[in-house]
Length: 498
Image 1 (cartoon, helix red, strand yellow):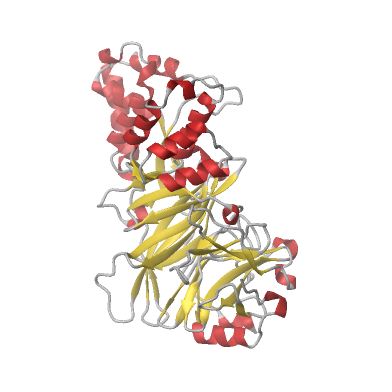
Image 2 (cartoon, helix red, strand yellow):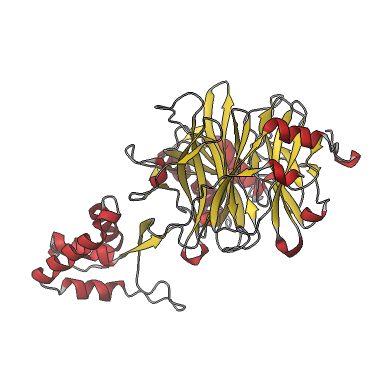
């Protein structure tokens, strides 16, 4: 019965191997036994005559110039990264330097392997629409060679009614560039507390830093530490840890003339070197106005960590770690506003139960209150959220995911009390959306999964990944969904109240 509520749309997004970025390539660094061959390669390039150098450059720009924005600048940057290996760099011609940069570059197809796990928020640009339309930004998990994930985007227009138009995604991609950030002392303190790094050095640093500080101020405070603290046996290790914790927060920005679908949030720190996964975007509103926030899973090849994105315009992003027991594991999703003065989030800290966590005064997400545990046959392995709660007149609508036999993922729903979201008001008696015959095959079979939808003109718009092979869209009338949920109130054990 519940499956009939959701109407699938024919529009889909599929992985496009033509969507490529340029990355630094250093020969030998991918070998099992690392032997950097950079100097030998540079010597061979330097011995090419001017005619051959010019021919190679022209050929390279003919082949790749239209696929990338400012390829010339990228080659210059990659040359700068390896020029320390050149014995007589001043003797090289500008063309040779540019060619060295080309040889130390390669293309990477960001979504050649998979495209999945979207979330949807109102786009910052609502110009040029007619009545009943809403332009939306769709975040996407892009997976390329080596199963490295990055965050990409698409734009679409919803309405009038159930009409859906996804904008073209062509054009050269741009990776965000590091930008200056005003660090927060409370976030540094939370990171040091989580690592149980509490000694006289960390206490002195935190006491000397203002609430907001830049890199220069941070280094000045470290440089002014008393020698009798630095001379302790724990001194070098503590300084390294403080610097690493501080560097976990950074900002990235894109040129103003890039379209949203051309922007790629690419791993920029060691904690996310193997991927930025499953961004859950939400448009958060408080007394200072709306701002885009998101959570995502950072993966370094061994460990996962929950991190947060904040942006006013989806062009400049500030990225910070999230701390505390509520931020453990994957799948944390922020509420779109404070509730009773509290910053709240859904989480799955134990790996299998949907919980509710709050942010304390020290920027740590507290031990969660359980909301919904695996119960029905389609979700017995684990349950989790499918994005941030959506505010409706009936309560907070929470899209959930459940995992059943053969690791089959399906999407369900809960309803939480608006004022006391610790209380589950109702739940859908079955799955809202499950993999159908056309959706069960893909990079990860038998999965439908979303990182967040929104309500427009009484319809729940639900973007979802289908077996990590494509992104589909479904709609559900909110009134019908709420009515179906109210027919099946939750078990007494799930009426949790703090």
